[in-house]
Amino acid sequence: MTFRVGVCGMTSRVMGLGVLVATAVHAQAVAPAPPPAPSMPVPVPRYVPAGAGAPRVGQPGEQSAPMERSPNTRVLPPTREPGIWAADEPKAVKKPVPASPPDIDELLAARPSPGAPELLSCRQRVLRASKSSGQEETRRNLPRTPRECLTARLLLHCANAELMEFMDQAAFTPQLEGSNPIEARRREVDAVFYWQSRICESFRSLPQIELLYRNIVATLEKQFRGAK
Image (cartoon, rainbow, N blue to C red; front, top):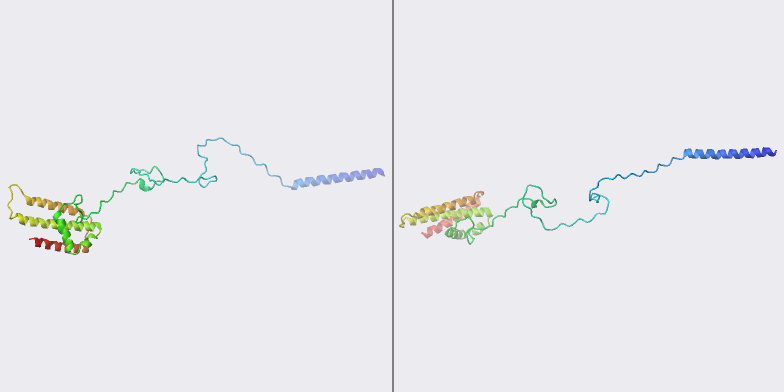
């Protein structure tokens, strides 16, 4: 009797142990396998130039403030090649534009401009005629090119009128042998004509300019007729 009880107790313990083992095996089969440990990359030595590892704009890292550019511009000689400094303005490598000549009114200037004939008496006569006709302010306020062309035409007209006046006086004046003052005066008028042609080459007159020219010329002709 006692032997039976011991056998039964032992059988119970063996069965209980089998249940525990079966439960542990089932738990291991159901639980997911742990992820594999990450592998560490093996560093490979390679050539890195100096400054290649510095952070750039848009990349992480400490960004230093940009350097301020000097307000002084570098004047470079004209060339067809791109500028040495990429941030320079385009005008630094362009051919410099020559400065325009000064605006000189031939009737108001103390002396003729470079290349212009002297015509001292004609300058005074044309200015006086322009004022007497009441057109001086209009002439003076014209744009530069129309004013220069109009003034050159008025001086040419006066030079021709003075030439005719000189020829009338020379007809009654004895001349020295070998001298020809009339021919010398004609060469002066020719020089005025070529100068006027250069001044008015790129200008086409307008009806208002022609009316202004006729009014001043009419007053200038009265001066010549009154001088005779």
